[in-house]
Image (cartoon, rainbow, N blue to C red; front, side, top):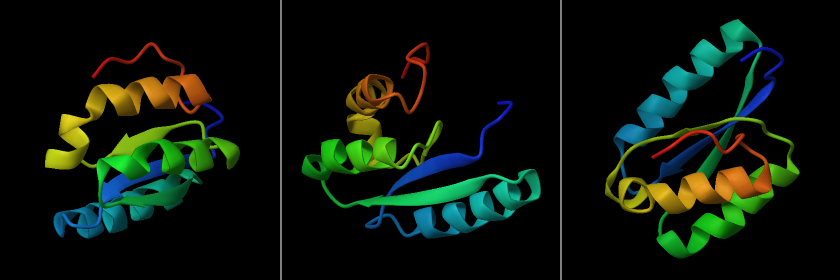
Length: 93
């Protein structure tokens, strides 16, 4: 995505593999000159707040580490990301 400088990485800290995925994503992003902003969640009730905070940071992309929490709430995550301007809203879960 041309001009992308900051992307959020949403992950459930209760999913240990997420930390590994975050580290690998940060390495790849650094090569591209993109800053990865980790967004940690542990429960669904945190999603709206963390995505709103990410939007305020002017991130224009979102990577979601798939686990049972994020998969179950994938439509909500996509809708919230589109509403806040993190993504353009054309993506589907």
